[in-house]
Amino acid sequence: MNLQADDLRLDLPATNKYLNVLGACLDAFIARIEAVEDARITAYNIELAVNEIVANIIRHAYAEHPGGRVSIVIRLIQEPEPRRLLIELSDTGMAFDPDTVAEPDLDEIQIHGYGLFLARSLMDAVSYIRRQDRNEWSLTKYL
Amino acid sequence: MALTTRTVGNVTVLELTGRFDAHMAPALLEWYGKLRTAQVVVNLAGVNFIDSSALAALTGGMKRCRQQKGDLKLCALQQPVQVIFELTRMNRAFEIFPSETEAIASFTH
Image (cartoon, rainbow over all chains, first blue to last red; front, side):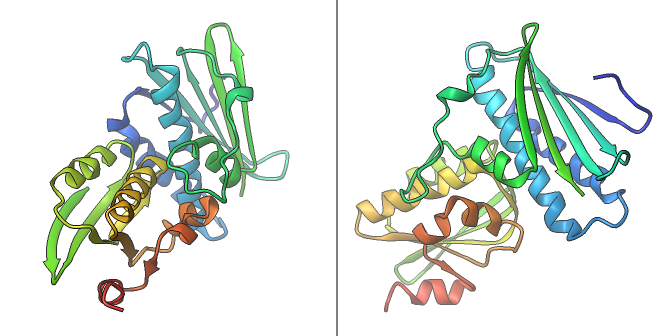
């Protein structure tokens, strides 16, 4: 992703220890956006969605090769409308196969397997592509 | 995240504060290892973030307590953290109370 003037780029160690740093950065970035409806809830939901994707990267993509990194770019797109927040994440871990992820059975008490479901539920768009030995995630939320 | 434990009658009350995420979830699993009762109230009034790993830790504790004929109940959830319970429908699996007093009292009713 070619950076633009107001983009925020983070490069975090792929460890759960720094999920709080990512959350704080997202919160602070969204706090500077004017006229966000239900700002507190919107910021929280975006933070949760991104947290779930990064936690999945740490747990699955880097399962066999810990010590990797996660690169994150946060961008507010004003034009063309609608205004939206775009969060792009990339890592060099193992490839992800979306077909292997079952939707959680919401009628059962399930302990794991909610991460991607939550991200998709909380964002307006979530996409994944494997490109040149990198996993690339794109999360979009209309604001 | 901080964990504070109190005992009220036969109920163990665990008060959590701060951010409850994948990094902190193991602390709760460790806490279960020291638990000697199966009647637990987790007070989430001071928790400002819960992710699916934290939810998994709570759910595991709830299952463990129910296997021992007890329960793990939740109380005082802040509004934003309720979203994860609603989307996963775990708000139906857990008994959730507005206050700690009500959660504790529910064990005697």
